[in-house]
Image 1 (cartoon, rainbow, N blue to C red):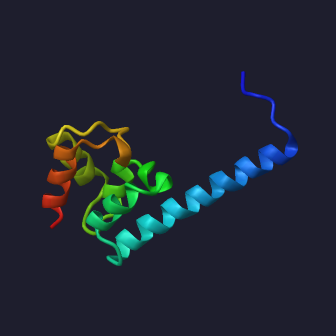
Image 2 (cartoon, helix red, strand yellow):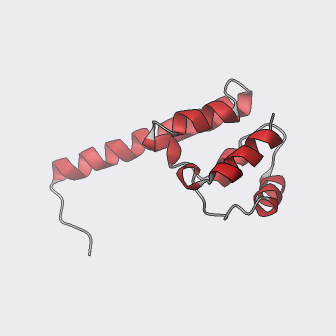
Amino acid sequence: MPPKLTDEQRRAALEKAAAARRTRAEIKELLRTGSLSLAEVLERAETDKTIAGIKVSSLLIAMPGMGKIKAKRLMEEHGIAENRRIRGLGSRQRATLLSHFS
């Protein structure tokens, strides 16, 4: 059973979640338009917990020229689980993704 929150705590949590969703959407949009590189996103994820929480699959789908199928195939090739988030990437997986998009 979820913990009982006061209305104020609930409102704060909802605002925090909405801000996180906005940040993740902005990052993916910047990737899509080419204003941000995958390397820059991975670098930011090291210090920003919100960015570190982005799913790798949705990040790849946001890359120009990548669709759901290509992203899924790429993740399978490199042994990256479907539900993996940026913070969960191993150094080898990170390196292979960076070399793929460089």
